Amino acid sequence: AAMRFDVLTLFPGMFTGPLSESILKRAIQAGRISVVLHDIRAYATDRHRTTDDAPYGGGAGMVMKPEPLAACIRAVLAMTDNDTGESAPKPPVILMTPDGEPFTQRIAAELATCPRLVLVCGRYEGVDERVRAALIDRELSIGDYVLTGGELAAMVVIDAVARLVPGVIDAESAAEESFSDGLLEYPQYTRPAVWEGREVPPVLVSGHHGEVAQWRRRERLRRTLERRPDLLARAVLTDADRAYLRT
Ligand code: ADE
Picture 1 (cartoon, protein in one colour):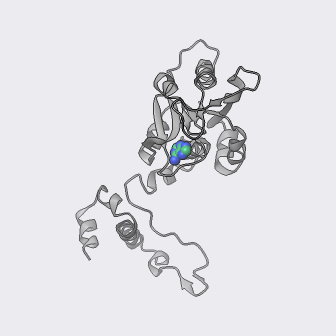
Picture 2 (cartoon, helix red, strand yellow; picture 1 turned 45 degrees about the horizontal axis):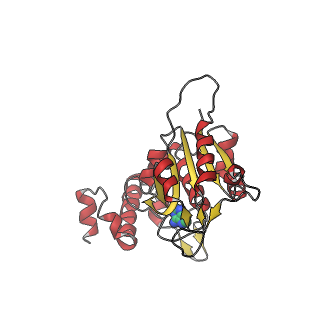
Picture 3 (spheres, rainbow, N blue to C red; picture 1 turned 60 degrees about the vertical axis):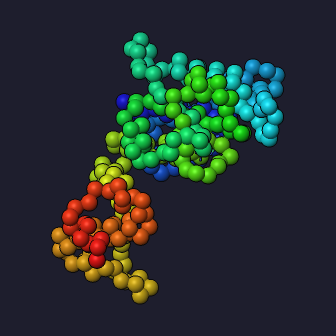
């Protein structure tokens, strides 16, 4: 069965472009994933369909009102894929917010095991704290910077999780890649063998698979040491790795 992402947003149009291209488009067409967009504004009940209001206590910006957002979350949780009467487990309701838990490859892998995720995109200065307390299970940040809303962050989570769903990409690529073992990737080359006077490292065209593997491992160690020493401190290293890093 396809993994389902429900996205609650004031701007559903922000998702249509990214979901209509490349790997995500193919994953949707192949029935590996589905993305259902829900317009929070459709759950506002006043004449102007108001979704935000000024903060109690004063201050800049606007806060997302509890009622339309809560109604939208509850309506989405009441929707199911099948009419068999079978009870699916309640999906996690995840709020995208800069004060959330930092999103990592580990969390992406954990979320990829869920049959369904509900992603809530905040806007304005934030979401009324009582909605968070009542209905949000988890809060995720995609990094220490502030976006205009949670939409791009939700799209990042969908992309990172969807590519881990079986059949969406080549299984080997997902298992082999950087972050599954805590090191950065080795440099990649393709034809031509010489481009603008720059050669491909001879070991890669040597046909010696053992030497290629050793070169790649060392390049990964070198790059990680240079660019991300914080990752190296947590990586699983062999004695040979440590010996190379001392050179
Ligand atoms: N909304 C605004 N900024 C964000 C961020 N960095 N991560 C997740 N959601 C956000």
